[in-house]
Image (cartoon, rainbow, N blue to C red; front, side):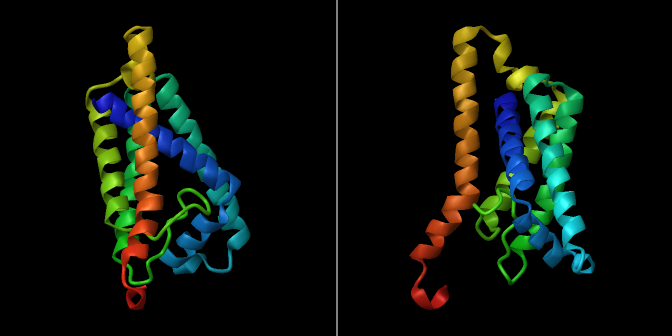
Length: 179
């Protein structure tokens, strides 16, 4: 179970990393809001977000292809940063998007903080009890590997929807004057 959760967290990390590498402007804008002293450094910040996104994708691929303590620790480190940033953004009155997935983002809320914290906990548990490639799913025979990979992808997709589509749907349900 922990291996599947960590693998789903790694898939989300990889997708988010690729999205930031492709479209760094939303994450760069979020950083400028969170760290005001970065204003006026948009080109350097955009390049840093691109590189950071690439690093996230490499960490995700390392965990998914190799597994082990080091890769799990790197995934956990990413989600520690994300949890701290999500907490900061969720408590901000401006309802800022995190830029996690490029332009496909919604303002950070409770679901985002919870998702990041669960991913952090799963990756931390995978440091304590290391899992193999694919969250340990690839070591148990073909049928278990196929079903397990499907479960990991489904978990990752649900996580993605929880922080992108769910907040958008919730905002549609609010009365017009509250928007």
